Structures are given as structure tokens and as C-alpha cells.
Length: 210
Length: 236
Image (tube, rainbow over all chains, first blue to last red; front, side, top):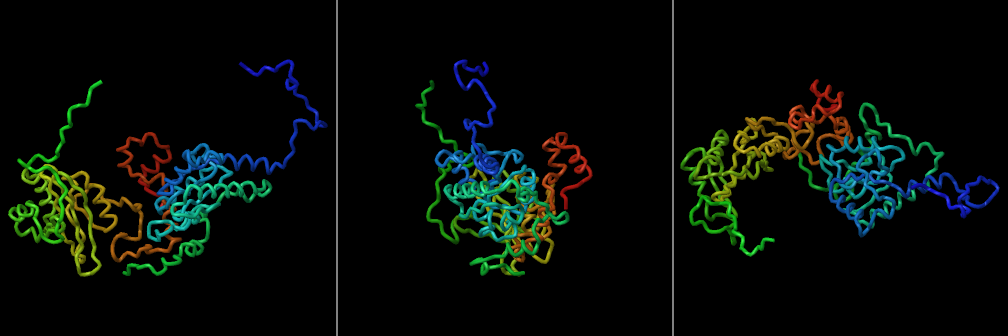
């Protein structure tokens, strides 16, 4: 079967009439493109801990991530738009999340879900990266330990707002990260050290001394 | 359709003891003292001076043995028909806060036929090389447990076929994380730790042995084959 035009229908004829007002909508290209992008974000779930359980709950029927255009979990980085890092990232995983981020095609965004992915949380230890923003750029940080699904949904809506406000003329938004070829770090080492400093009560925690 | 009217027979694992009471959770266990595992007396009779001391706590028996004869004693516990410790639950190590107290290596053994649990400990002096016999040839499950112990404490298990790091990556330079002289945040700065971690190449983290076991060598990309053939492990 194919598309057959009804002979009695006015819609059967396609006419090009630029002077006519019928059948035309004018908009900004920025809005159209961003509207499409913001409402079809495919997540790349990078779940390493309990935050991934909350992420699964967000994707399940009660909270229904599909309402926000995230119908499909994309387990291939090539076909995904937003990397959601849910959980703590040990140093052993650092090159892997970096590789996944570099494999994702532009346009791409990332969400650090939970305190561990954002700052390292209480895991101020030899094994855990103190925030994935030392490895990849992060667009939205979702606080919580773990965040409730509502929190993640709020973060996703914030990301959608950010996508809606992008300008296509701003080429810097689509710049790939270029890590330093010798150290593979994309921000200066003193900045990483400063970001990784303990704060709050963890400054006074017991430390083993040599 | 078969009707499930017959009651199920309870399968009891231990059957080496005649007239053994059915398994029951013990109650009101004393913190110190109590009934000793009969294997401790059998060990003292068999090995004499190699059994240093034993203690009972919360109903569990701990036997301290001489380091040099650890492999021999555990093999006897596994092989002897009157012991039959056929399940190795754990291999781990302890380092105490006091510097003069020696480190300990702990084996948790379980005898399913006799329903016994025995904890074997041996002491490693810190001024001597941290070496102890591997029990890999007795229990294959000791493989990763001993690798973890080697990784975290730096204890060498003599006779282990593939003793290398298991939790930290193999080029990890900061030492053994569970040692008391290891700072909680590691020895290097965060940026240096991240630099070393990112320098590792995740694709070439597999050793030739692992790839041979998986028989995946023919399916990986040609350049990766070439790099592995030349012995490369990571990008470090």
C-alpha cells in the first residue's frame, strides 16, 4: 500500500505559494533545533553505584523518564546525547569514562548525578575521583546521596532549559575537549588539586600518619 | 500435572558425623572461652610445636600456626578424612596499629561434612619479608583472594601462579593501600593520581593470559593484537 491522494480533498495538491499565509509557521532556527534536541535527549547511563538504582527508578513507570524525551537508554556512546554519571568513579574507571565521553558525538551534554559523581562525597580516599568534572566537562550537578527521582528529573529539566538557550552561532559550545597531550588532563593540575581539597567536617577527619 | 503432596526431604550437607544433631543457630555464645573446635586438638597432636596457640571467641576457634609450615598444615586439614576442610571462605590479612605487633594472615576454613568452622592465623614479622605459602594448589578459590591480599598488603604468597594486583591497576605506584603507613588519600596529589590513572589505556589492560583464556585474541583489532604481542600492558 502506498499513499494515495483522495481526489476530493484539497490536501491532495501540494502547491508552492509563498504569498499565502496558510500552512506556514515562522520561527527561529535556534528555537526549532534546540526544541528538537532538548526533547529527544538519549541518555548514556554510566551507573556505578546506588545512584544507578535511583536512575532506574526514574526510568521506570512511576516517574517515567520517557515523558522528557528519554525514551531510549542508549548503551552505545555513539548514539547518545547526555552522559548521566550515576555513582562514584574510582581512578581505575577514569580513563573509561573519558573514553566514553570522547566517543559520544556532538552535540553532547553530561549530568553528574549524586554527591559522589559531583564531588567524591565521603569517599575522600586514595581510590575515588573527587568529582568527574576533573575528567570531563559537566553541565548539570544533581545533589543528593542518592538524589530522589524527582531530583534527577529536575536536573534533566535544567539541562533542557540549558539546551533551549543555546545559540547555533556560538561555535564554542560544540568544541571538543582537548586534553593536554602529555598529562591527559584538560584543566590545570593546581585547579584539580584545589577542587579535590576536603571541606567541612572532612578536614578534621582522622588520618593515618606514616 | 504432578501433585506436590509429598513433603520435601531436608538435604543436610554434613553427613560425616553419625547421629549428628540437625543444624541449629547457636545461642548465648560467650565472648571468650567455650567449646573448642576438635580440630584444634587434632592439630596440636599432629603438628606439635608448629601450633603456637589457640583461642575461642564467640564460639569460633582461632589457631595460630607457624608461618613456615602454613601450607603443609592447611593441606592436612583439607586432605585428612577426619577433618575435611573442603571450603575456603576467605584469605585476608590484618595489620595492627602498634608497630611492634606483627601482621597476621588469616584463613577461614569450613568443613561442610563435619559442620565446623576454623580460623587459622599466622604472624608475619614486619622486619622480615612478608611471605607465606599460597594455598592455591589446595583451594583454587584462593587465587583472587591472595591477589587482593598481595595488592592491599604487599604480602607475597609463595607458589601462587599469577600474583599481581587485582583491585588497583598494575602500574599503581603508591604502595599497598590497606597498610597502616598508607595515607588515606594516597601518597600523590590528586592531579598526579588523575594523571597516572588517565595514562592507562583501558583497551590494553588485558594480559595475554586473560585473552588466551577468553579465546578472544583473534577477534580483537589488529593494532591491539600487535600491541599485546609486543608485551604492552597499558599506555603508562
